[in-house]
Length: 182
Image 1 (cartoon, one colour):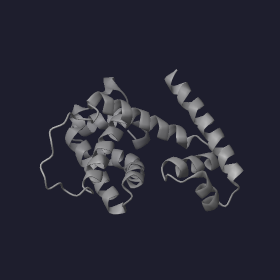
Image 2 (cartoon, rainbow, N blue to C red; image 1 turned 30 degrees about the horizontal axis):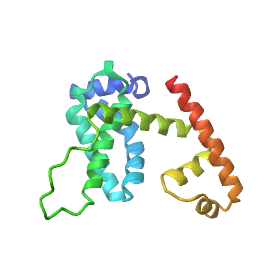
Image 3 (cartoon, rainbow, N blue to C red; image 1 turned 120 degrees about the vertical axis):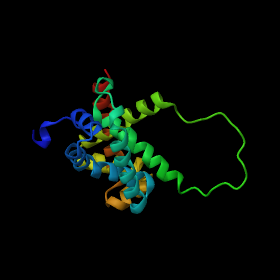
């Protein structure tokens, strides 16, 4: 069977059975998007590369736990990637010398993390469907955390154009996501 003919779920199932070819195919399909996501979140190429390696190491080790009946393979893989990226972000924090106080965990449980990963994956997929000029403005605003004035300056376009693209991009993104969750 050719590489494009297999779904992510089929590839993950095969990886769970120890199929190296399926793993390589999955890696070719997702290593770049995972790297891009890690780079945006971590802001450092080396740590992003480490997150990609950790992601696919975890995929190899835990693919047998993937259950196709629970959902598509991509959200499962992105959940693994998110955990690797979060772990990579934690390595940036200096270790605490004093022993921390016991407090209730504020992190989401497994089901909440899966839901968040699925939603993040859908938003990224919907962003890819936006026109380039709207997507660029939204990425600079939300991922690079630039103000509209900074975006206008960086892109060398009028502030009014940035506001219009932001408004129409958010409306289009909302429509795309509403179609998914209706």
